[in-house]
Amino acid sequence: MRVILLAFTPDAEAVVALAARLCYSSRPLSATRAGLGGEDVAVMIGKLRDMGHMSPFEHASFTFGIEGISRVTLAQLTRHRLATYSVRSMRYVRGDRNGCVAPPSVRRNQRALALYQKHAASAAACFGELLALGVPREDARYCLPLATRTDLVVTMNARELLWVARLRMCRRAQWEIRWLVSRMVGLARRAAPLLFDGAGPSCLSAGACREGAMSCGRPRVLVAAARRRGRQLPAAVAWRRAARGPGVAGT
Ligand SMILES: Cc1cc2nc3c(=O)[nH]c(=O)nc-3n(C[C@H](O)[C@H](O)[C@H](O)COP(=O)(O)OP(=O)(O)OC[C@H]3O[C@@H](n4cnc5c(N)ncnc54)[C@H](O)[C@@H]3O)c2cc1C
Image 1 (cartoon, helix red, strand yellow):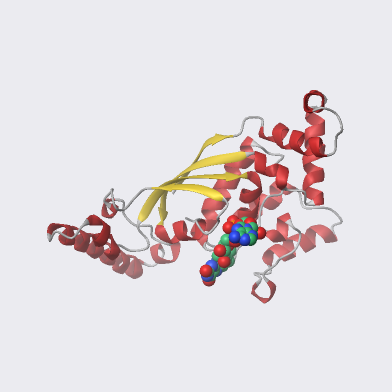
Image 2 (cartoon, rainbow, N blue to C red; image 1 turned 30 degrees about the horizontal axis):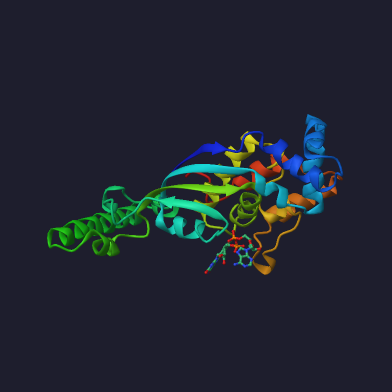
């Protein structure tokens, strides 16, 4: 898997802060903009996050190029509706030539890996034979595995990406989407650190786990430990720890 940040809103943090300041200012837009300094931007973005006034975050958008994720993860990602997706067509492009993603649990086990690869090769051979028999590509693709790799371009605004991080950087999310979203957030965070300060699963970004009885327990312990020491976990540390996880390590 490869994730590239292709483009993002220039001066994303200043645009978000200006949009927010405008809501609470009686001055004309140009005067509001002129009076907005670097420190004001940081303060304003922090206030928005604390208040839950998240709509100004929608003015900043981030476009990612993603290479080599499975169709499994594509299906999970595209459930997030407030984003724009362009995915390589399997009607117009031969899907059997992209290969398959092998999960870490399969790669760790030599016998499982051999079986998995045999099945992938057999599906690719079946695809080729169906084409040779005159079956159109759009129908032949039905025999390809969910593990088949694909590439896409996705654009999300900062509010949606923060939301997706909350759900998909959680240890309860599957390893591949957790890894993907962690990378997307990492890249966006480098481009606009103030917007993504504290981004991560809900135990870290919202301070509480929402998984109830299915909680993994570990992040909650992390937050509780920080609280016991009487301080907030530094956002950057919290984020890095959240991005790690059993499924991410070694992949
Ligand atoms: C751990 C995990 C397990 C999952 N398991 C399953 C499963 O077994 N089966 C399954 O089908 N799905 C499953 N999902 C997917 C899940 O049901 C959601 O489809 C997915 O997480 C997208 O979430 P969302 O709707 O909050 O996000 P988005 O589509 O990204 O939307 C963001 C937010 O915008 C608002 N919004 C968007 N569209 C609307 C709308 N039409 N009306 C009102 N408000 C809207 C909501 O507040 C929403 O939370 C799982 C997700 C996770 C994280």
